[in-house]
Length: 117
Image (cartoon, rainbow, N blue to C red; front, side, top):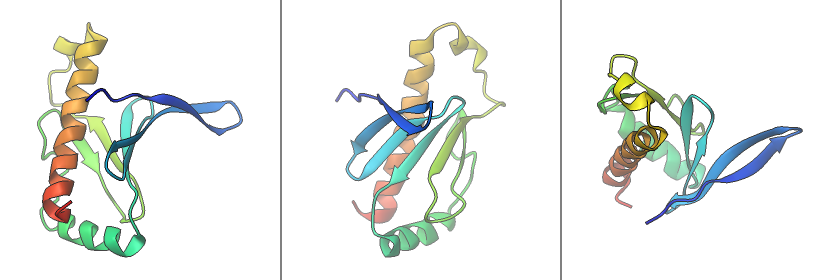
């Protein structure tokens, strides 16, 4: 499946690439040095998933990435792990995006396992 990011105006002259429904009820934004994963579920469901997720939370769980999910109402933010050798990929933007897609997909897989969705 080909994911498409479209520019969305946040405010004034500030725009972000957004992929609506990257996966069922999940939007993904690219914010320069990180990706944001927004799970669009009712707050009660998010709180249950968040509490289950935190039992096995490790911000370096996925090779090459560091992620944060600090509160059930917030987005999950995915960053490059500085301990990973990103220099090999830096020369090719497609390889970087492919690696980020891999990280996003691993987080979504974890979400699916925890939520049963």
